[in-house]
Image (cartoon, rainbow, N blue to C red; front, side, top):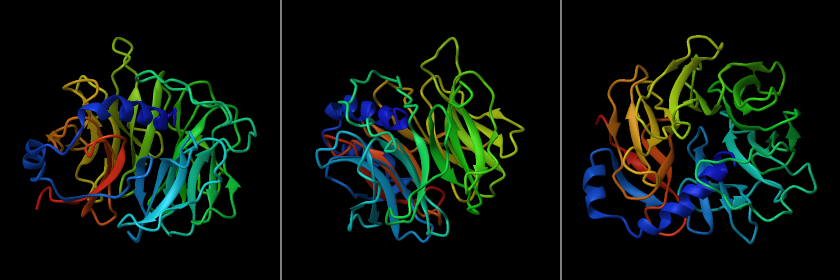
Length: 328
C-alpha cells in the first residue's frame, strides 16, 4: 500500500536475488511447524492473501497483465480460477472477505481518474507514499455492486472485518497521523483507537473480537524499527508485545487466540522470517528459516493451514500455503 503494498514491492524486489531456491536447511528447520508447502501463484507479483471463512477461496493482490499497480484477485484455495475482482483502474490494496462470504472490501484510488496513470515511483526501503486518494470500498465477491465506505482527506486503507462481520478496523491519516480506527461494517460510527505519533497499521481482530493486534513504527531513536502491539477494541489497554530490535510487522492471531504469528528481520534487513509469540510477549518461536522474504502470514479459519507471501521459489513474490503443524 505504499502503504503495505509498497513495502511489499520493495521487500520482494530487494530479496529476490538471494532466494534462488528452497534451501534444504530451511526445509529441515521448518518441517517442525509447516508441512506440505505448496506454491499457489506464479504469474506476476503476488501477495497479501486471505482466506474466505468457508476456506474455499483466497483473496489477494497482484501486479500482472502490464498493469504496474496492484489489483485485487480471488482464486480457489488450490490456486485455480484466478480472476480480477477490482476495477482494474487506479491503485488497490488490502482486500478481505466478510465472514459470511457475501462481501469483500479493499482500498482503491480508482475514483480519481488521474490516479494510477503516472509511472510507479522508485521505492526506498521502509519508506511509504500514503496516497491521499486511497479509500475503502465494499463489493460483492465478483467485484460488482461497488460501494465506497470511507470518504476523508488522507489515506484510508488496511481494512479488515471483525469475526462477527459487524465492524471494520483500518488505518487512516484523516487526523494528520497514521492511526488505527474502527467503524461499523457499513462505514458509519467511525472511532479512533490509537493516539501515538508514528505509523500504526496492519490491524486484525482477535478471535473473540475483543482485542486488535497491529504493528507500529513509533521508535523515535530507531525509526526503522517496528513492534507488534495489542489494543482493546474499545481503544483501551494498549500494550507492546514484541521487543526484538527489528521490523516486527504483519501480526495475525491464531484462531485459538493462544499466539500471534508475525514477520521480523533480526538477522539482516532483507531477510524476513515468520515467528510466533504469545499475546503476553512470551514464547517467541521462529517458524521459517529460508533466506530472503517470508511475510504477511495468516491462518485459515480452522487454524490448520498457513498462507503467506514469500520469495523462496526465486524471482518475484508469490503466495504459498502449508499445513500448520505447530503444537501437534
